Length: 381
Image (cartoon, rainbow, N blue to C red):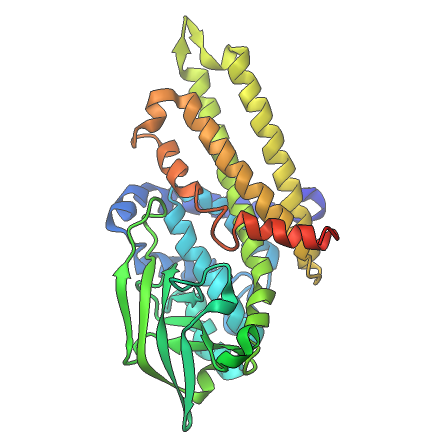
């Protein structure tokens, strides 16, 4: 299926970005995992090379090629740290697309141009302590005060939240309207009243600067409104497709890398006088994993193809996200089993992959939400 989706130029780019990731990112994985943060220099370096703006219009410094960014997300697993991939992805595939789609020309110039250069880092701030998948239940309030907005509330589990320069923020502007009373804002984090209350300690994605945020009478100008007043819920729903496609791509990339690494290990590891890959039970594990990965890849490539030609494939995206993220968890788990006791040791990448991959069926919409979307789309409910 890649033959009718990606061009030869995309495949050349795949080799180029893979080489960059393996040479300039992967060697620092452990260092950044221990530090709990991806250095800003990484964003600047990727911006310099044009890797942060591939889908964005040339007028803002981008390349205008959606599929090139898709290749990046599939290859980022090779950096050996889910947290590194998450921070880059949150910036280019989750935060900035809201501005590209709903922002004014002034907002695009203010945030997209430095964002594509890597000079500013963005995040998407929606999730709250009591509102995850149920976006309509957020409590953060934005109240009009003269020409400004005053925002009070909190957010949690925000990727890049602990060190972002700007955020795309969801807040209730008309609480009586429920989900129809949510608006989006794009705000600078140097505003008085904004604070990072906690940098979260996580099972995986340890290199990601995930934060818990608070807004206490944070005053932002009236032109911080992103899109139409009280249309935020619909804007959020409309932007989920690309986020979920990129997560599915990353999941399949991670599954493939884990299987390839486990296969190389199985060919070298000896037991009972021969390599463990020669045992039928192990060979069948690989056969099953390869089949699942291929099915997942074709599923997400199909959703990507529909999205790239301007459709809104809600069902197909949900199927791809559900299947690919679950496959990735199953494959990495099986690969760790193949490594045996060594797989449980931090000296092998599969241990980190095992921790990192578990968030995939949760982030960007849980498996349960994906099943709900699919069941409605096929007429079950």
